[in-house]
View (tube, rainbow, N blue to C red):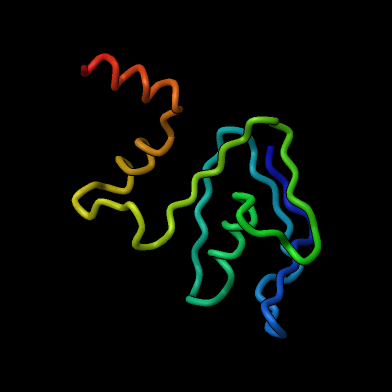
Length: 104
């Protein structure tokens, strides 16, 4: 389970995230939606460990938790469906290596 507790983030003097708390169960997938500038990217960067919150915590009950994050305009094939993209990005490195070896 992934849990956030009271996440806060401010850029300069502009509050971006204020008291964000939620839990995601194992094998559950979620999406973030909202208007531009509401903090979706900031929250994903915090969850992925790319950025730190000003206060609050992110905790996981799984020691090897993987969080997928695909930034807008980066690495997305416009000819591929969202489902195919998510499936491709959910493959482990070991599975990918096995598949590459089998194709060689």
